[in-house]
Amino acid sequence: MNIDKMKNQHVEILEKISFLRKLSHAGVSSNAQEIATAIVSMSAIIKTHLSAEDQFLYPHIEHDGSSTLRQVSSKFQREMTDIVSEYEVFSRRWNIASKLVGNDAAFRCDANNVLRKVYERMQKENKDFYPLVERM
Image 1: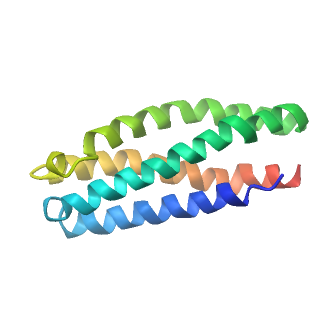
Image 2: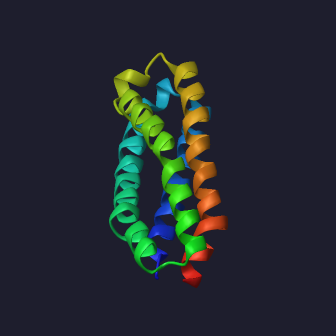
């Protein structure tokens, strides 16, 4: 199965996280519009990515994958539920510049928590899951 598009989406999301980190360090309030715009853009990529996983990747694995791959896939799906929920709350909370202005510390704390989970999850998929899928 070709998952290059999904791998490229991971790169895009990781770049957005890095960009948000840079803007946050430079000042949340002073970069509020750029941060909000980056969050909206990243959310669109994440939604597309999750949709592709749910509509194509996971069903394909369930139908054609080995028993081991199906078990790994199911575990990854279950784990993603909480991360997605936390990210959705984060993105709704910080997707408008006016919500960011004056809330530098709160944004940084929230971003460090939620975006770290997204980052770690993508690293885990890149290392532990996608290689198995590509061997399928």
